[in-house]
Length: 102
Image: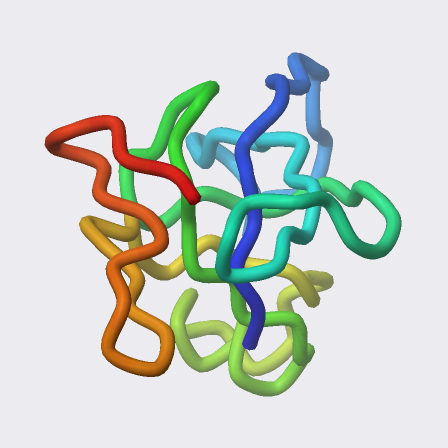
């Protein structure tokens, strides 16, 4: 799992039944303080996230298939939660409610 920032949306006429009705978002992996790290990727949204949200992302195919409840679903990267706040070494480094980012 990793932290990420939602930076965009993907709209496409998906022709795969397992993905029908699911929102696809572009996520950029970030460090706890919000600085970017890694490459952007497309994730299936199971947490009702939106652009600008800090999210928790599962990036492992079997776990993604379990979340969808379909052992044959062609999915790897899934947003599983919207992050409220992040603490590191006792210090608040991100707080969604107050807009705090260090």
